[in-house]
Every structure is written in structure tokens, then in C-alpha cells.
Length: 94
Image 1 (spheres, rainbow, N blue to C red):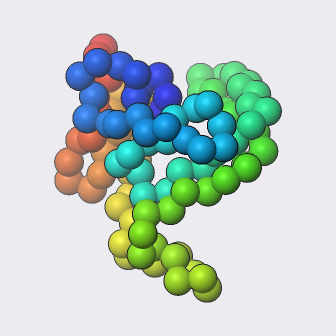
Image 2: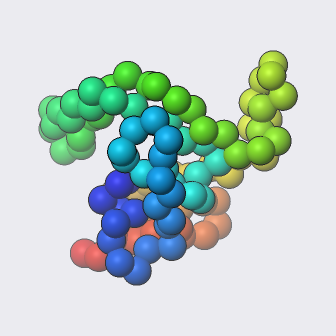
Image 3: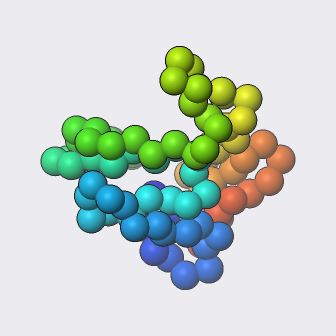
């Protein structure tokens, strides 16, 4: 995802994080700041592992008891594009 944020022409915004050097994604209602990242490629996909050191939530998503999942937009990835239901957020050049 970080590579996507850095690509020119995306609609995603890199926002400075406060716990780690890696930027947050402005359009994401929830960001996890991790350290000690390790990437493994067991097949066609890359798995990332790390220790979560901070969670950044959009205002109004958490009431100190639970997350309001109705307010969180779903984003999916299908190899060439990131999508929300009914619209493309980012499409990779093929």
C-alpha cells in the first residue's frame, strides 16, 4: 500500500505518522502503525508481519466500547485495482 501512495496519479494521500516513519493513508478510516516489519512471499502474494505500535482512527468510529463498522467504507483489492463497493479507488497500470 505504501508503494501505491507514492505512485504519481493515485487518489491516495500520504500523511505523516507520529510513531513510525512510514506514512499513514489519509483516505483510510483506520491506520495501523507497525515496526519490525517483515515481508514474506510464499507464493503469488506478499504477507507482512510487524508489531502494532499505534492505531489511528477517524473521529466518530470508536465509542470506547466498539467500532462503528457502518461508518467504515470497505476497500478491497483484486490484483490490479483497489475498490470500494461500486467505485475504483486506484487501478494499477498493467
